[in-house]
Length: 161
Image (cartoon, rainbow, N blue to C red):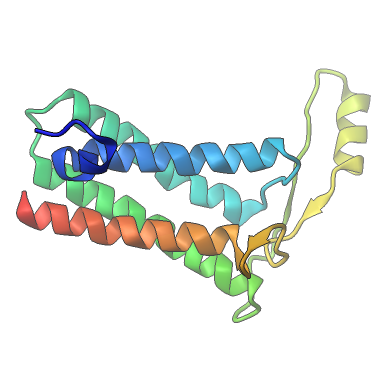
């Protein structure tokens, strides 16, 4: 049996899904550290990946759990993320109206005056503004494509499990 990385999706699709989720979530936090604070919809897109990481970890550690059930749960979480990312991409493209709320990145401290200053100085992060894109596709667009692809992958693996 090959131990190469390219055979991982076939050998252990649950572990592969967890690795994909970790890379996507890590990339999102890396963008945040690079100065691209997330909007509300960006945050919402992170939560399914956290669930995927947890389920993948449990499913990888406990091989006795039914593979089909684990893969279906992963597919549902990837599909949820694809829905959020697709909605966000549509908001960015002005295909439909977004949320009424926007968010700001605020550093809360123990000092009330410092916290108030941080709130007042924080940039307003709008869900309908594209902070970064590559080849005309935003982060939400790439997230949609990855999540949708992983949904299909998990469903196919579940049907063969």
